[in-house]
Image 1 (cartoon, rainbow, N blue to C red):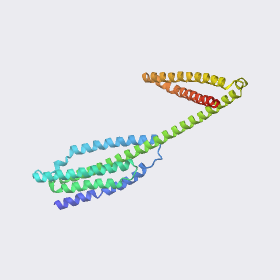
Image 2 (image 1 turned 30 degrees about the horizontal axis):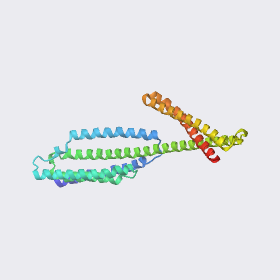
Image 3 (image 1 turned 90 degrees about the vertical axis):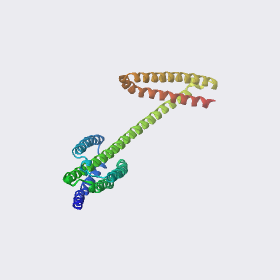
Image 4 (image 1 turned 120 degrees about the vertical axis):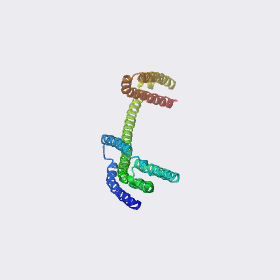
Length: 288
């Protein structure tokens, strides 16, 4: 009877490769990064819903069929301890394989092997428990195995899909953020070049101005020092204004939005004045 029971269990679990093979195609979909950010978010939301549904299904299964309910009532202490060791070994192996599974999913690598290994651990546990199962509950136990293996595989399939899609989504967002930053850096550099070019023109015009040209070096330096002091004073005012605006931004979310848009303009002005100070000081030092 026990031998026939074992054959039935092995036959049921022979369907596991079929479930896995169907999941192979899913990996091609998961690793496809051509989806838009919105599509990825929508897919993740749907997978989260599926995951919640599977958890509920699994909970309902174990409400109806507690694994221990299928065990013989005449188990000895030695047999009971052996069952505990078998379940402990299963949980240890399962945890180890799951760590590899989820890491591979995060690295966007195929996880078919790990899913097979997890189901193989399930198969071994069910087989090891056969000598301790009450034959009267054979049909219920086999039904439990079928359903549990199916839900277990689907849960791992959904979990790895979620992890992989979240990683693809994160990568896409990072790429976009990098492109935005690159564009911002490019604009800042372009603005800096324009500012420097205009200031160079103004300094050249000043140097060629007849009124300035007739001054001796000491007088020229005095004129430039006064100009530099005025620019620095204005720069301090702008920086104080910038700090004041940000303090308001912390107290009022609506102000934050306004300040955020104005802050870019203020930052550009501050940047301009810093460049002006630098250029004027370079010009002044060249006269010494």
